[in-house]
Image (cartoon, rainbow, N blue to C red; front, side):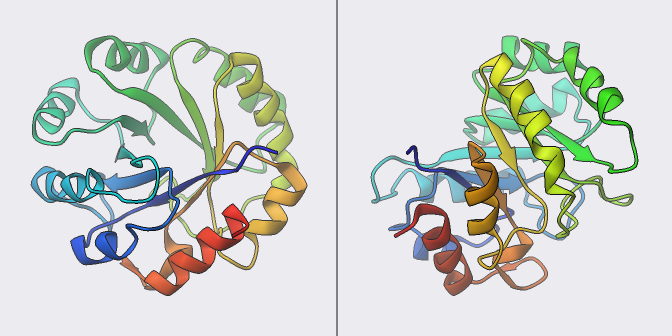
Amino acid sequence: MMSTALKICGLQSVEVLKSMINLPVDYIGFVFAKSRRRVTPQQAAQLVQVLREWEHGKIPAAVGVLVNPELSELQELLQETALDVVQLHGQESPQFCREVKERFPVSVFKAVSIESDRPEAERLSALDSYAGCIDGLLIDTYDPVYGGGSGKTFAWDLIPAYQQWAERQGIPLFVAGGLDSDNVAHLIGQYAPYGVDVSSGVESEPGVKDINKVTAFVERVKGK
């Protein structure tokens, strides 16, 4: 069985990142949107430098998390910080996603917030216009203030429909929203998503990553 891809989001500290250097993490996310985990392009450039020295197998991909950025903002960011993936959390159009892919040497992941009270068919048909425009799909709990990143889980029985959509497109599906070392093994056992994404679930206090929680989460996901 293929190992579940693991993304840890909202890294801000060079020290914490250096302490993770032996862990099998596949993606590290840096938040450039309004958030208590926000980093500047300059901070992110320093953090990406640490990633390039990773010791455990392959180097994790550097992911930039943005909400409704302008292309000019992306251009400036990518000149400063060598990102592998741009993860878009706003109302970015399919055309915008395609333009980012064409203009910059990055993969584009689109994050979608799951509103349980919205009819499934309506949610999924809205996704169809993104076919061919994105390289990955991330589903997260809807949060009225920040859009995502709420630290709460959503109704996981909605996952299979998104999984099937992503499979039809030949792209990976990541699940985020309220994951921690207590519930992630259950999620993987039940739904086997391509990847999982954690942020607040590995923090000792809001915005502060805890290496012990990170290690426990990695062990649950990777089964080590």
